[in-house]
Length: 450
Image (cartoon, rainbow, N blue to C red; front, side):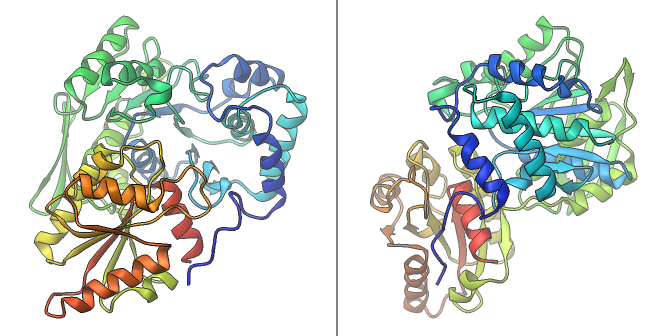
């Protein structure tokens, strides 16, 4: 049995501090920069004391672009700080210093310092922990910072670096509409807020409306723009990845990360590194050998991750494949369903989904991407997550999307249902099981299934 989730954070000294920081502001997300700039000023503006920064925004694929960027830079022997959000298992994942996750002692030290300097003033959790991140980065030498936007761009707490070496805007879609707007053009405008005067911007695959919004912002601030499918390309040919831009062509191994969309993400990261600028000159960050090593070695948990061990795997039907993905919007679902269809072309297996989602997500839109591909969907709630959509409501969404579905009490019950379906079809190959719908669910699985 998978044990119940005990709390939102692991039991540790840092968890206690993080719990106190959560109480400093009544709103989970509040998009202004005043509080962040006030606290950073009181801390001596650590965001101005960083190595060259690659700043990455977008609705989908920004984490993968960060992972590829870090892998390629580290393949050159460079030291890289990296910030991501949210974390999957431990908060420490959000702050990587010169290649290593921040230690418990240092995390506690910087969190207590920002807490003391903030002196009880209202501030969001993401802002105050972001200030701690900048403080930690400023105190360690490194060659580069890979900085993932948390939400939006213009008013995101990471958008305080005045002159990054490169900005990247990954595909824009409808997500977080309660904060960013209800249409693609408005959301794209928020994402484009990270573009800085004169700083190059790499634009990943986009809806035409989003691309035009981003290009207008780049033109307004005289930021050189490099557009996927126009200025650079990434594609699969003969079991290899081909990257191409005006500098030439790279014949590369397929990325370690699964799915055609990861070829796009790798191409965006490569373009960002090849075009990054610092102090008016091009960075030497796109070495061919390092690019090849980076795409082959990149690691990014919870994104079409193949699970091969653990209690949940032990409960699955004999010979089953289990995949885990934290994507939670229709654009992500489309990319994942294409990747699963590609797996089906190589080894045909019946697909079963075990799905959980937050109430704020487009569940029907997400599940519609699997119509005609998934044999059956088992819906569950996210353990320990108050904002989870109930299994019954998610079942309704699955049925509305045209999928055969049934609710389950928990993950153990869900796997029992998959076993029952497999036993009812003994002549079929062992199933392919995709656990999907939420990063919170992915984090729970990785934490409890280790």
